[in-house]
Length: 231
Ligand SMILES: [Zn+2]
Image 1 (tube, rainbow, N blue to C red):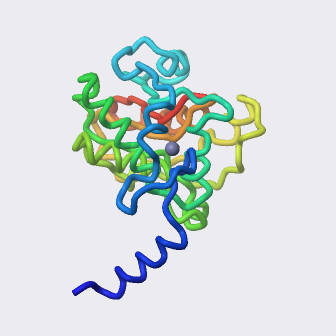
Image 2: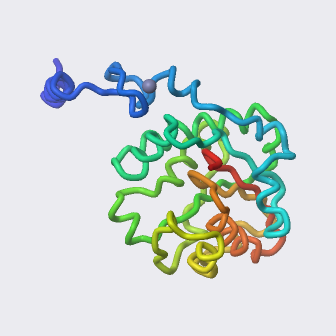
């Protein structure tokens, strides 16, 4: 016997069918939130296998990282931009998990990230997280973790000061906005460990640099960085 909840879900689906968040094509009820075409048409980098790449170069002379990678190139008007918007502003955490799984698969198959002990997402300020309902970087980390089996820690790196949105700031302004705004708790968990810091998009790298600088205060910590896209 079918439950009433399933009837209601089917009825709802008739009125509001699921569509791909990037192109609007109709999707089946149990399909992922992004269609196959879009998922494989967004231009991908080879950074997981190629360690000499723009992400590692971006942090040279700023913080010491072992490896750095991004899954996608981010162009204006691209399908990825729509996905990012849905993930951050339209209550679609499942997009973060899906794209995190894609990134996790690349990380795993490259063989370059086998020594990572923990995944750590860039934290949101608790107030912002409450408004959004979730931390998008944590959703990406969840996807990576489910594919690679690497555990995620969300109680170690925290944001202690609310920062204002950075989209219109210069690199220097961004650095002042985020520098010193992160703290470590339970630091003993990551002593002597290699952690993979996760974010959605890297532009100037200020937020990742501030997080990385904070993490590198932990004894014998090794740091790598993975993001969904580089702008
Ligand atoms: Zn699509």
